[in-house]
Amino acid sequence: MASPRRTTGLLLAASLLCASPAVPAAAAATFTVLQLNLCNSGVAGCYQNGLAVDEAVTVIGRRLPDVVSVNEVCLSDLPRLTAAVGATAEYGFAHVGNRSTGGDYQCTAGRGAYGSGVIVKEGIRTTDHGTYTAQDGGNEIRAWACALGEVRGFTACTTHLSTTGTTALAQCRELLPAIALAHDPTGSPTTRHVVAGDLNLRYSPGSATNAQNCVPSGWFRKGDGDVQHVTARTLTFVSTQTYPMYRTDHPAFVVNYAF
Image (tube, rainbow, N blue to C red; front, side):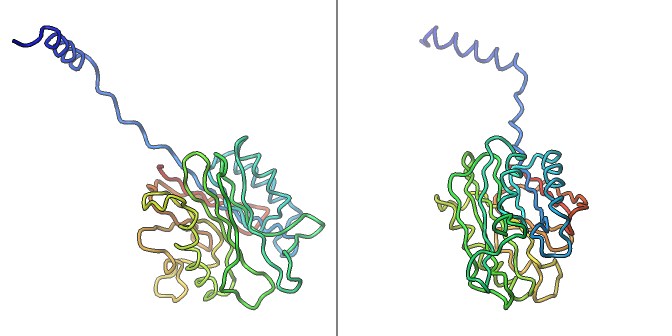
């Protein structure tokens, strides 16, 4: 004979199932990456006395990104940009080397080292930076920075590549996938990665320097129609937006994912 206690429990469970509405599946978390090039060294003709930083703060406040990749920025600009991202945000920085001096490339007016930053809203567990083996003959030694997110464990990288197309492609292939994957301590094939930056490469099918030529198997790329790109893996693409910037020569480029 069946236990009355068990039978009662089954009947109660059945009645609850019939009476309760279906619970919808939890929605995927949004994950937004903002790519910027601020032309803020003070040397290039597109420099506008640091006003691109003000403009970037406004864009960050409107788009609320989880990750910001920012190129052609001064180290002294990053605390303000990071504060705009959020109270828990932290940054990593890639110093551009100066071939002539053997030290770091410097912004004008004592504004500190020049390079690229990666800002992560949730904070950073570990960060690293370095320079590429492939370099052109110019004065800037191009570099990369990667950061491992503190909470969700994703890796985000930033870079600004050579203006010589063949060198830029070689640098891109150094970064993707080997350098980016080295910042996943789990070695898991499902860990999320985003690599953003001004690659100085365009999407140009048939060209030897097509930006798509440095996208590894299992990764996908989204571009702003020019030289800024975000390449990712194990994230679900949702949409892109491009916003004009008036204090620099590059638009703000946003890529939205489901995490």
